[in-house]
Image 1 (cartoon, one colour):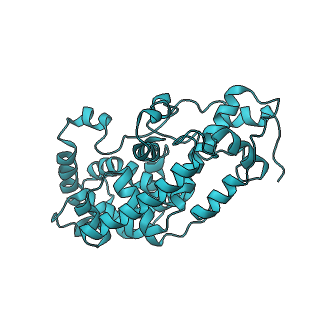
Image 2 (cartoon, one colour):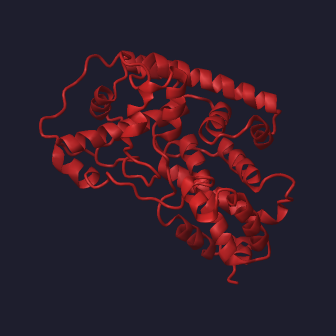
Image 3 (tube, rainbow, N blue to C red):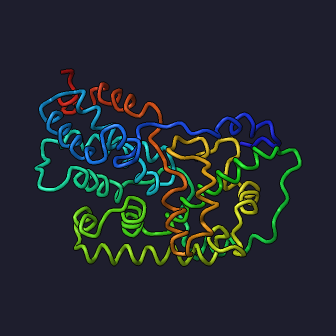
Length: 326
């Protein structure tokens, strides 16, 4: 299908996505801390787990809402495409619900959920989105991009900014795809979600030392690519978002009429402090900050409703038994 040119197509799809919409904040975030108290999120999870195991539907629904953003955020960074992430997250949550009676409380509930999510995502087949590229291939594309291309004259400045923003987020997602799945998973758990070596080892069924080593290798690969190519990390590098966004449009690598990321629900969007503050950090911390905070994805609206519909479809009889009214 031929893509529409000019500002009209952009304005229809992009001009209304500046502000952030979203769902419940991630476990441990400031918003949840304010709602439950600084030290009570884990306590609240423990209470909800007990009540959900006793068959209380409202407790199960709240439990799902408290863990869904972290599961979705992990899935989206692992799989790139939001729809794949939604599919995987629903499947993970179904496993969590149907296996809730197997949780023995020998470790944290969150660690148990991470383990289910990790095992599922290691074997989940990506169905949509760009093909994964090696770091060498991405670097060669950057090097072959040439000098900055000019924007189309009909594009309004706010629309240009949104196109660049779409490319920037997509680019960071592609960087993660440059890692193989075991290293990508370790990197996201350790770098984005601050999982410790001990926790990471338990989640991946490896020793804490092996997890730390895997995370170290992944960090080195990401940092090497970013510091050698990304102008946000090192001014003067060849990969400049404005230049690459226009090239991506011309090459058909990005669909200007169907943005995946700029309109996506998130906790913080277009926060100028994230980009402006990068140059005040050392190069290693710039990479970590950019990957972790730009942006903070949230589960799409209606996610729990879709899960309800899936349960009510009678495809999962055991799930219906556990998701019954109080």
